[in-house]
View 1 (tube, rainbow, N blue to C red):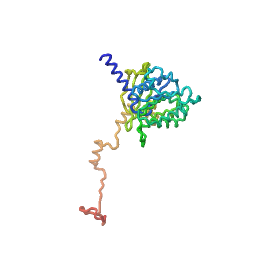
View 2: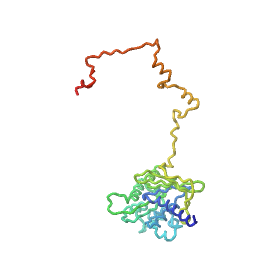
View 3: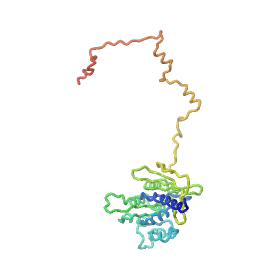
View 4: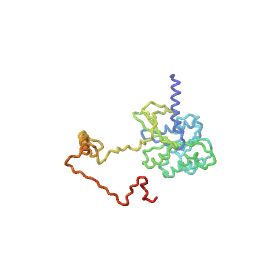
Length: 316
């Protein structure tokens, strides 16, 4: 394989990973931590959506617009619609372009769109919103936005909606994180080891079992992915890595395993329902001094001895 062919193959694998994250639409939850940040992956997904010709809206709450746009070329930046809630989140300056309800008002306004073109909404970040809004209110807005294309009875066709939410899970308790996780169609948990970043990708497809896989990658300065070799896990039935495995054999009142001496005692024990040769001989050949018994039967008037019709006494 020539270097150019290898580069094209690598690019194909990178696009395949990004496509798998955006294919289902709905809420794509990016769970990062202090050690493994997720904004770079968020920007890589934003770049992929922009290059596909989708409308891309950025709800910037955590960093400035200049910092978020840094690293994108002019073509990508021109395709992004940036809603700046970092400088003036409460709209104290009363600017006309600002949404009156802040980030929540922007989300609700996007619920009313009728454009058939696919759209990607990037939330930077969900943690910023979750710390300032009630969890139920935010979840209702996310559900309404991410399920626009599947609303029954909607006469106007609406394109696929992908909501990219960056969540710093160390800032929140298990309750809000669990609720957001249940809303997500695709969930990406960032981690790694020995300086190599990994993404544990969980996909929930309608009427199918959830599948997960692990990809090892690095993000280049232009926010393209460089997939790397690692202990890749093949797609398998879902097992949540955040739920600790519990050994069911702990804290039992009995032993599940036998020692060597206990095993020998068990093997040498004759069970009462096991017929040994001595027991068979004793039952088949009674001893001469053993008392014998006989059964005498005398039929009475109500006994039915007619073998041709044994049920004639039932008056059927």
